[in-house]
Image (cartoon, rainbow over all chains, first blue to last red; front, side, top):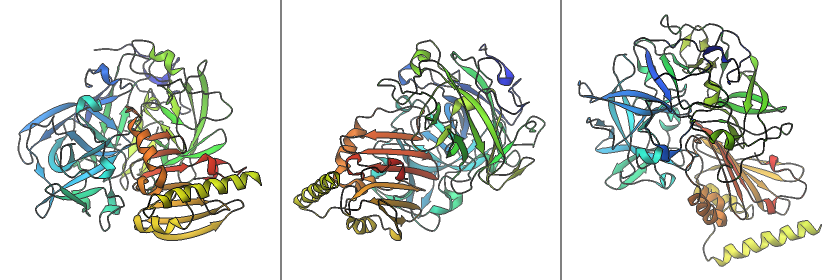
Length: 395
Length: 157
């Protein structure tokens, strides 16, 4: 289904106007290393009750390890603020292999700040992204009924209708979701649990057994990803089609040009954004459906009345700018963006909006609107490309 | 002067309430700085540093890969807590006598699709703000009524 949009270059009223040149999103690439992506389009479930606007969806193929017994699952949320593949148990039809410690299955609790969490066992699957070779990787089976849920997972996601997706594909630039912090010690509260019947207790887990970035395991096209979503008009649109490209500078369809790489701090996973003369830790995140930041005092950005008080409702669309800086102190570049009145914009048949945002108490979260009309390169930690060594974002 | 006396009275009132509850408080927010030792025990944390600033003192404790800072008024009451790290700490322990109202406020907060990375929860007496993404969870909790007069809430970080 074709959707009318502003096309590449972020021109007109669309967001994605960037200080760099030549990084518009033109014709979407094709190839074995390309996954289709739709924002609220055909790859997302049509679930209006869920009201998930600006939802980027992809499709993944999951196989029983070492077999060609596979299923293709769509409505997978692309979340670049998380890492690893997580799929609801109800959706999986192919048997996977439990990751265990001795006889005990390993399970994981991952809380999110939208009041939900993901609880469920870790299982190994062969995962196929695009038309790449399958990779054997631990994934999380989201299962609120799995016995032994800890206190930190008391409101776990229960089913796809409840959550608004069949699962999520985390493609932050880190390799494993917990990493070294779970290898020799158990964080408080724990990430991973060893479960014996209905009793689960925190445990350490080797890196190879943790839920991790499946792209990094590919034989080629493994050093990062590029998210390409065309610009859209300022009033929004019902849906927009984009692409998720695997690899940076590994094929003719993923060679960077006209972009600047901003290094992220390997510990925090943040870089720096200055707005209103205040510097914040910041990150680029497709799993956030707006631009969320502490509003500068110089611009009037009141929040909407309840129940939309998580969003800004200025009386008219405001144009703001912020400066992004690499974690090491350079480079720096200005990003201009717009924030419109959320309630007015939502009073339309549209589901995808460029000019929406809301307050964040402590960081600058460049959510999905940042991606419209600019290619965003995400360089995986420790891996090299022509743009440098990850972790970095480039745009 | 009147304000500090009122705060002292409020803090004393909280102490009396917690003692009357008949069990050793695991709490910190709103309690005396002595309770930080019980937080350390509850969170398996170690003391890292104590820093005296102009209008308050900060005690830092570290629980594995999570750092917690407790902000103490001149009258010895913890008026704010901030944290950052791999996981967010057990808020039930840190919020003490405020934990129940926080849980109830959470229970009444609807799910917000697309808002995985930040939250702000108000109760009658405290505000809990959280932000972050995988590997870096941050937040702070404070009782506005306990903040020393003239001190900006932005000092709690």
